[in-house]
Each structure stands twice: as C-alpha cells, then as structure tokens.
Length: 277
Image: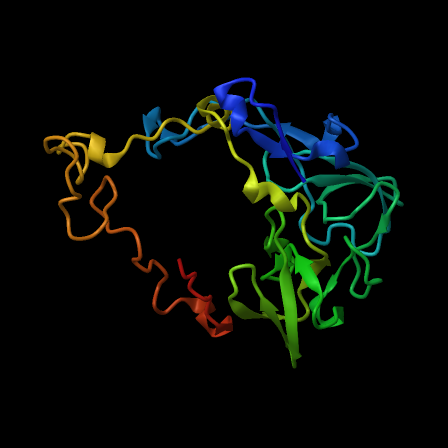
C-alpha cells in the first residue's frame, strides 16, 4: 500500500512513500551493521560517474544471501527497513544462538519459523534446492553458481516462476519475461519479495533525490556544443544527430549492448518480450 500526504505544499502534492506499517522496529542490530566510506562516482577526487554525491549517511546491514545456516532453523524476530535496498529485511534468531539478516518475502511475519535445507517445507522464506520446488511456485534470491549466494530476483516485489523441471535443469520465467535454465541443485528462496509497490513511489520533490545521493541532471539540449552532442542552437532545436547519443558520443536508445557470443546464452530458452508502447 502506498501512503499519500495532504497537499499542504507543492512538494507534498505528489509525494508518496511505501507503507511502513508492516515494520516492527526502526533500529538495526548493531553487531550486524557496518559503516562504509562513500566514494560516490569519484576516483582520486575526480568525477567518473555523473549525478552521484551527497545523500544521507547509511549503515550497511550484513545480509545472508546464501546457505550459511544450512539445516539450522531460525525464528523471525523483526521486519525492518534497509536504506541500501528496495525490499524489507528480517532479523533471524537461529537455534544455534547466532543472528542474521535475510531478504524478507511478502507475508513473512514475526514469529514465523524458517529454514534453509536441501529439502524444506513449502513455506514463505524457506530456502531449498530448485529440484524440490514444484512447478508454478514463485522464487527469489536464486543462485547461478554453487555456493556463491543468490544473484537473481533480489529487488522489491521481484519473483521468478518455475515453469518446468527438465532433467538436471529448472526452467525459470524471470521478471523480465525471459525464460532461462538453472541447474536444479542450486538454491532459491520460496515466495515473492516484500515492498511490492516500491516502483509506484513518486519522489515528489528535488530535495528527496538529494537525500538518496542523486545530484541534478541537466538536459543535453540545454548545454553548449562543446559539452554535449545535442548542445547549441538558437532556441529549441532538434537533436541534430542521426541516433540518440550520450555525452561521450556513444549511441544509446535501442542499441543492443549484450555480447553476441555471451557464455550464458546457452541457458536462455526464450528471450524477453518487447514492451509495446
């Protein structure tokens, strides 16, 4: 659910935030947080990536993406906000006395029990081998290399659907509509990630972008010819170049960037469908 505000100011009129009523605490566990130095698009003090800088100070939460606690049951203690990612996270108290954070699926509640094992009960948040998950189920935080932790479907509201079990491989329909195969001995977590409506949030004002560490962007057509391929001209002029280009003259907009002979092509069963506008 998206929370809206009364239009008491022009900024508030379109300002929306996620519904944080599902969160149970506003402070992380101190021993699982790390302070990180910000580089923010700079190398040796020089800007190498534009539009990055500033932002509120954030502590990094150490999250378990893999099978670090294989076979050890855990109890969900909190549902928390994480400033470093779009989905919510959960603090888990494990039976061996250890604590850890995991990505929280939609519907996970305080008091639920979870476990990571080769074969586990089909409950939200449980992590198991793909071969033991039935066709039609939704999964997230999917491995693509044994022991390397989850790499696919990790943002808010993301989930891949199991469409087939074929020998040593599981066919997954990704959020992009692409169907790819993954060895079925790799692990994935059951469910769909929390904070589903994150993509519907309206920033509402420029200052909020600065809090997130995003600096202002200037249109290329507003620049001088020396600064951008679109620059110059009297008043509003056309682009002046045959194809859309970046500030460095590289072609953008519709140009395919994927390598033609990429090693992972053999795992793609069906390419993603184009969105018709």
